[in-house]
View 1 (cartoon, one colour):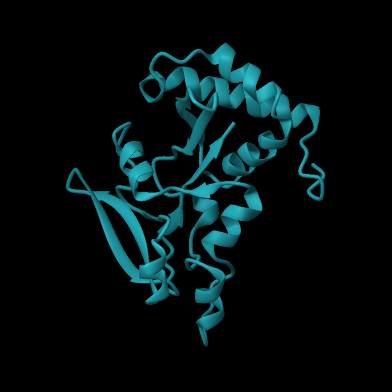
View 2: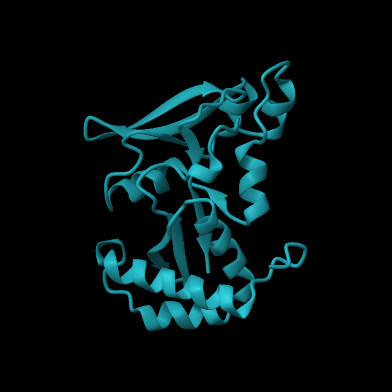
Length: 188
């Protein structure tokens, strides 16, 4: 893979498409009334987005189609791994939070990580919609997009599922934990 151009080799593309197809077929409850052939055609015409899907997969997100926006004719992919993606944990919320830590700094922050792989963090609404498709984050938690007024006060939001209920919590944006990561969304 050429990371400067963010392109996949033909072998990587084929392998990724195969993984995505198998996941799509295994999890029909996530995308009622959608056909794989239409998704695959969209993927074939959006090779630039395949790199982002590959990064979602590489970091443990197990991306899958969760919807189709008929207005924009885009398929929506979310990270659908049972727990917050392993390759995206132990990071504080954003660069400002990272720079504010005086000691024990994490290696990265979720806003920069999401931008680097070309995805958006889930909003609270998107996170709750994901939880309608299965039980996610029963042992981990995931940062979500935080409203500007909360962030300006030093906080950030994260979610998880406990006791068969989706909870939204707050923490200092500079906090980080080994079991907290983030889930991304990508439109193709």
